[in-house]
Amino acid sequence: VKGSYVAGLSVDYPVVKYLAIPEFAVTSTENGFELYYGDVNGATKYVIEKKTGNGAWTVLTTINNPTEDVYLDEDFVIGGSYSYRIKAYAADITSGQKTVAAITRLDTPTVNSISVDVPGMTITWSAVAGATEYKIYRKVYGTNQLSLIGTAVGTSYTDTTAQSNVVYTYTVSAANAT
Image 1 (cartoon, rainbow, N blue to C red):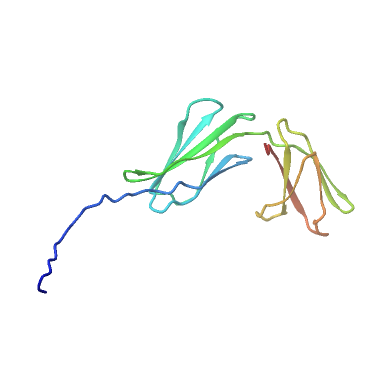
Image 2 (image 1 turned 180 degrees about the horizontal axis):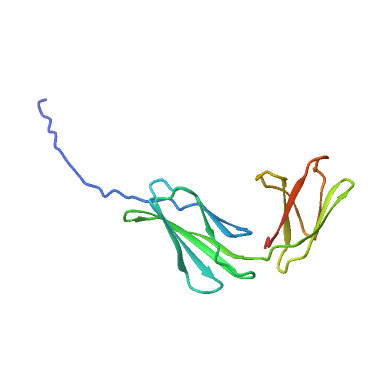
C-alpha cells in the first residue's frame, strides 16, 4: 500500500499469578477440632497454623497434594482457646491467609436421662461451664447418619419429631455462640 508504514512492536508484560484465599471453617467435635478448607484452583499445598491463647502462631500441619478438605486437630485441652489460619501455595505463589478467630474447647455434656413424654422424647443433660447453647443430634439406632434436630439454651430438649416404634440414639454437644 502506497504511503503506509507498518511497524512491529513487541512488549513483554509480566504475568501476575495469584491464588485465591481458601475458604476456612472450624467445628468443635467430640474428637477435637475439624478444620474445613475449600479447594483453591492451582494450589498444591496448604499450610495450617495454630495459636493457643495469646501465644505465637506455629505450623500445625502442611497438607501436600490434598485429597480431602478436612483436617482433624486432636491436640486440645478442655477450656483451651485456639485460633487457626490457612494459606494455599503453588510453586512460588502464596495466597492471602484466612483466619478463624479464637474458639474455646468445651467439655462434653453428660446425658442424664431420656424419657418418653407427650409430645415426644425428652432428653436432659448436665450443664457445661462456658456453654451458651447445646446442640442436639439424633440418629436411628444401628445407622451412622447423625442429624442436628435442635438447639437449647437450657439442659433439656423435647424431640417432638420422634416416631413411634423407632429406636433413636441422641448426642448432645456444648457450644459457645459468642
